[in-house]
Length: 95
Length: 201
Figure 1 (cartoon, rainbow over the protein chains, first blue to last red):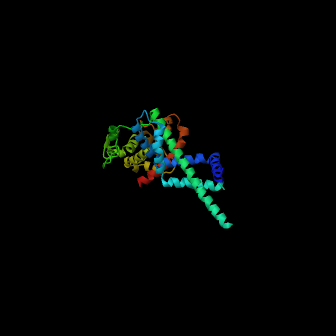
Figure 2: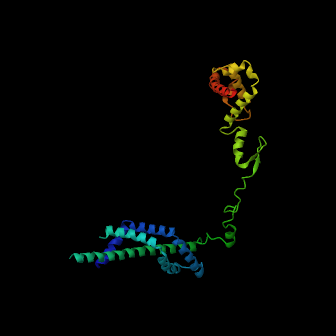
Figure 3: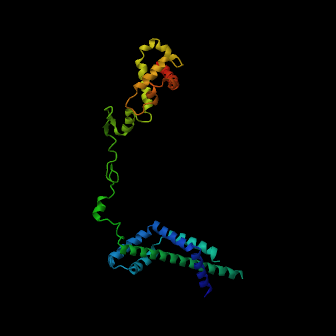
């Protein structure tokens, strides 16, 4: 294992163990709902469902459509805030 | 050596930055997947389209944006100019003044008994003007409790609307217990006398 991948593994482990990952998840979800991202994505889902049919739509259909759009449509302010928190965590626990 | 350390730390920094970006990317993907699962479950359980209404209902309940109407389409200053007839005194009263008027009229509000008392006092004074030349006048000017004041106090109590629920307790017991109740009359009459003095001047 290279030094870098060891560092990653230990950071990820700390993130989970200390509950920070869960907190970050909740924060992100709240921010995305607040800024309307969730409603936007739901509208996209409706389009997929209407296309594939209510009875036959699968999780895979939704994932394949939503994930790239979702990633692209996250507002910059939300990204900045999350990154700020992540960097703070790393500064404290990765060195 | 220092140079290397600096470059090492900047390399670390860029690595840390990359790590931070990766972590963010993971979190975003997690949010997307979470949404997909949520939506899929709603679709399969049948509650995904519940909050949608058909077009016709949407048009029926659309927000109204006309002058003079509120968002529901109702006229909102409809009751400003309406008048109601008071069941007690049969006068026509403006709608916004109706409730306070009823309070005074029926003698049931907080201040209605005070106002009624004041009116009775002024009513007594205007009625008794012709009698004030006689000996009653001297009695009225006395600060002590006098028979004249008691007469007025008695009159005041009986002049109250007998149907009003605010009849004072002393009125009920007046016939049976004159002795101990006198103290209450005493307290009230000096006040009444002062008022009379003010008015009779």
